[in-house]
Image 1: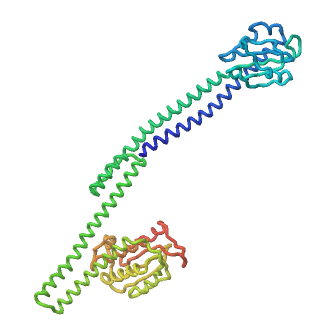
Image 2: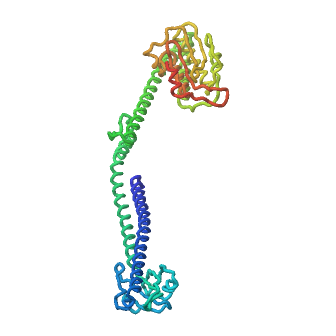
Image 3: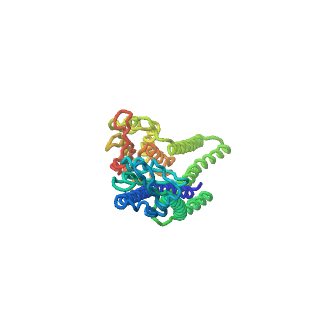
Length: 444
């Protein structure tokens, strides 16, 4: 079942339930009002008969004097004496007689309402005592009854109208939701079609059509296009990485093949053996660095505890300094990153190589510095790219990948390379991860 259909059914059902509940409340209120109105009419008619019995008792027996309408029907009136004998009755009763028990309580001075059936007609009854005085009905009671059919018909009409209105409102509401959902989901349908086409063709250059509106759909399209931009960049980086790796591998492989051919033709010489060993070592180092970089980029975040001051002391630099600094990390990976920085300083820097471990503003800083001029500012981001610089061209790329896997970053300022990592604030299992604001304080 589609989202559109589920939404329509939910809206229609909610509308139906709400209106039926409202109808039940209206039914109770209307029923109470109609019954109270009927009771009030019966009581007024009883008062009129009682007044007639007190002022002109002779008129009680006059044909038609007790007849009066109650709604669409005639009221049924019966007057009894103190012994319960019928003194007068309305013509609307015809040959029927109201039960004598209805007036017994009123004769005893207890007026009240009641219900009874007269044949197939259900009646609402009110009985009231008559005052003492002259006439046959003195001290007796008057009983007024009326059919409840009008009330029942009205309530039936109200219920039928409520049910019909609820069904009609549910249908109209569902239709309105269907139309509105169609318009709301149309941009999503276009996004789905284009996304499916992008998935089928695998073309990362295509983008999703924007609905040109600032709502959830527009933001979704913008987010997905941003994701496609990232995927395109990642694919381009991967393509460039493969091309750079192929280029880097081609040089030692070409030299190795030439040396092997020379060996096959002229035999081995010390110089040739040395070249072969150098080519093999270069290939092995490049393969190792490629494997390390791949693992660093794919591995999960480590959970061990490492002391950076120990790594600084064991780094092989000309000098080291620092305080006790603990981070959550992979000791071997961090040691390899420091070794790469030290090797980079010896290759491209000059003077003494100093390694320092420190802690500042809630982050751990591991720096490797030399006494050379350092990296020019335009090159500071590029030095961490793959195949940039001498050696295998992957040393600093591995440093950055290691720092990012540990939740930190690597950067250079002048001749100082820094690995910035979240610090363990205390020598316990509680790990303090610095906020983004704290990390910003360490930016070069």
